[in-house]
Length: 102
Image (tube, rainbow, N blue to C red; front, side, top):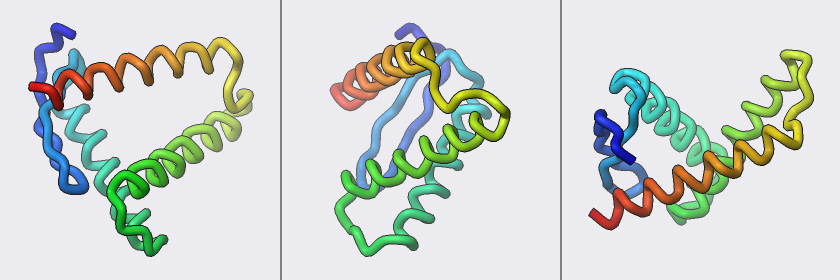
């Protein structure tokens, strides 16, 4: 990815830099939200493993997203949205792998 903005992430004992085309303030807002959700997850569960905390936090965030979509009167996930979500997820995983490998 040729993204121009970089953001240093340090979450659950792991640090790396991501690059994205999005505005730096927007990326920081996403990171702030993620950190807040991780703290909520840690308060809700006795799990200490960072990977499990990450997965559970992701589950809670996706639940929020799908509930919001349903509240807006749309189906939670349409088949074409599912394909798009998968493409985005795979791209993000690849970008994170690249960032960690730097």
